[in-house]
Amino acid sequence: MKNRASLPRHFLLLLLPCAVVFTFAAATSSPNLAYPNPTVPDDCSVSDVLVPARREVYDNGRIFDVSHRYVPDTPSWDSRDGLGEFLWLGASMKNGSQANVSMMKFSVHTGTHVDAPGHVFDHYYDADFDVDTLDLEVLNGPALLVDVPRDKNITAEVMKGLNVPKGVRRVLFRTLNTDRQLMLKKEFDTSYVGLTMDGAKWLVENTDIKLIGVDYLAVAVYEEAIPIHHVLLRGRIADMLQEIILVEGLKLDGVPAGLYSVHCLPLRLMGSDGSPARCILIK
Ligand SMILES: *[C@@H]1O[C@H](CO)[C@@H](O)[C@H](O)[C@H]1NC(C)=O
Ligand SMILES: *[C@@H]1O[C@H](CO)[C@@H](O)[C@H](O)[C@H]1NC(C)=O
Ligand SMILES: *[C@@H]1O[C@H](CO)[C@@H](O)[C@H](O)[C@H]1NC(C)=O
Image (cartoon, rainbow, N blue to C red; front, side, top):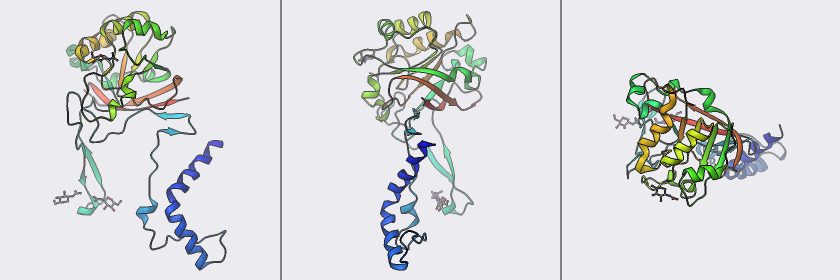
């Protein structure tokens, strides 16, 4: 309950330009300043008042939004131009429709998203290992947010050094990518930090990690992206190894390292090898 206080304060700030007009109008029309006239004055248009709140953190620092916004400048794999215009009005009230109805089109591996095993394995794809088959239990639960040494990719040596305790099943890796704000740069950057081949193998063989989160578009370094995805996504049915779910393109700036409850919810896109996901961390 104590957290409620942040909300009114927030709105007060947004209303400030109009609040001045409010007070003035109240002072001239009524002597009772304690109960100002709530009517919106003519010179304070509705568009001035309606400013939506956009936040990264909720409930006084308890809930962190770790998903990125989808905007035309969102970087896109191997592209210099970014996502581009991905959202448009299919029907609009200005054009006589009863409602505004937006349409969208983009790769399922855009922005904050998850990979399904079918992304890099033909036989999994053909066998319908799509995003609808990902385990919601893995996608939701205790997770460790760790800082990777900023001068390194995620090698076996780095993995060892991170000392992820046995039993930890979900790890989000914050790397140099966050400091470089790569997810906010339109042009795709191949020099991003990711797992190396030996790092991926070490993780599979020596940890209990079942969910890996990273702060750029791929979990693995560019040059070996596909073979490393193979190492991580292989175990689904073959050896009954752990199923590892990859969450890519997370927004991890401004969140203290430590233990959280992660919640990632991909869409139930039947047949799809990936899906945008809303991911949050709860303290
Ligand atoms: C969208 O809907 C609002 C009403 O909610 C309307 O005022 C506005 O003109 C519409 N926008 C377009 C582009 O049609
Ligand atoms: C409204 O209709 C015109 C004419 O068909 C079209 O050029 C315009 O893009 C439409 N605008 C919206 C917001 O749908
Ligand atoms: C990580 O690997 C990429 C691609 O192999 C490379 O360009 C980059 O410099 C490396 N980053 C660090 C911090 O070592």
